[in-house]
Amino acid sequence: MLRAVPARQERLDEDQIGALRELTSSLVAAKPDAAGEYARFLGIKQRGLCLPEADLASRVGGATVLVTGGTGCIGSTLMAQLAAREPGRLISVSRGVTAGWPRQENAEYRYADVRDRRAIDELIAAVRPDLIFHVAAQRSPALAEVEVHRTVTTNVLGSRNVLTAAAAARVPQVVVASTGKALRPYSPEMYTASKRAAEWVATTVAAGGDMLCSASRFTHVIDNSIVYQRLQGWAEDDGRGVVRLHSSTIAFYVQSALESAQLLLLALLGAQRGEFRVHAITDLGWPVTLIDVAVGVLAHKGSRSPIYFSGYDPGYEEVPFPGLYDPATAGDVSPLLNAFETAAAVDSPCPMVDAFRLDMAPDQVAPKLLTALETVCERTEDADTVRHALDDLSWSVLDATLGAAARPALTRSAKLVVQHEHAMTPVHRRVMEAIKGHANAELSAGDSPL
Image (cartoon, rainbow, N blue to C red; front, top):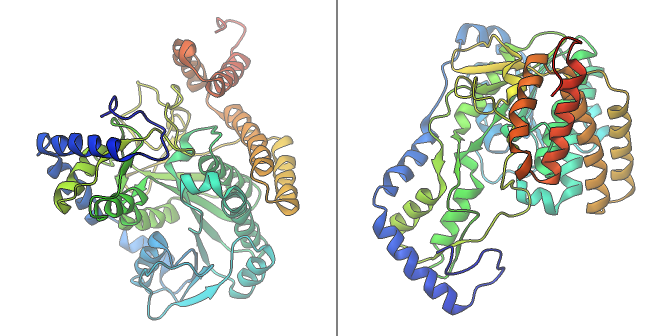
């Protein structure tokens, strides 16, 4: 199939579609076990976490709780989890995009966009919540490359708006929803970079005041899976749709919306004053194989839609940076933590969850670059201009990250990464040089340089 029709073709002619249809039919027949992988994928929707109910009852019961993005998939699931624990007042604030997710009968639903700083300031000052769960975000990596301005103003500046408004109103605690993609300490991709920058913003707020601030990282959530929605649409197109997969070798971790909402509750319990703790599920199960899920969907629907391996779209990294994981620790903790974060692991509120303290070295440059990013976004919506401003901030955040990393993790990572230097992209090479630079700066006079 890879040889029959080359990747990166926007449109396929009838001959190509016919050839792929025949090959796809043979593939479906040759992979009866794909049905099991498809069933496993769907079954993840039923997974949940064990929660310390007494602790949650004391924190949520009777409290005024505000959820940004409470009408989305994870937000609505979180609203249900919160409602079951009898808060005194439960409020959702969103920009009105609901997609039909359920609402809670006794909750309040307000309209406001996290990008509107004045509206968020006024709302939080008026409600004066005891707890804020910040879930609102632009969540699509592919869309982020197209709607650069909306992604940056929502994920970075919107998060800044919520956190600073909460601090100004003396809200006791904020929990932030993040992504496993933020384990990459630098990325040129808009979604990953925006969420990584949002984590950095949260560290500055957590370190600068009395407000408790923590986060949860999610991986692919099946309940609002963009991949699954596309597969279903292509399969239901009476054989006319082409199933476009990035690669034949993709495998990815998956979790449920219920696990995601419960993880946010655990992050609530795991927060510590003066630091920013990030939480992720320890055991996400074996990664799901995309080609098997696609074959399973086609077989289940009886669809004649052909599979085409189209290559990676913008927003999705084809080759990961080789220094993200340390073989000495990978597999013992959540795959949503990188080698530096694993070295900063702390106790978590639940044995099913890992937590680490995300530290950033004091930096005079990054705050100025955040201000510059805001100024750029106020002046223009030009994608390239906004992209460059976020990229400048991202490199500064990388420097702050490495500046706070533990010395043993830095030196070990540097030694592991240089083995892959010959095959690196220019971006990965620059990240490697940054790691090596910080590792060498940490070496004592008696150590051998890298």
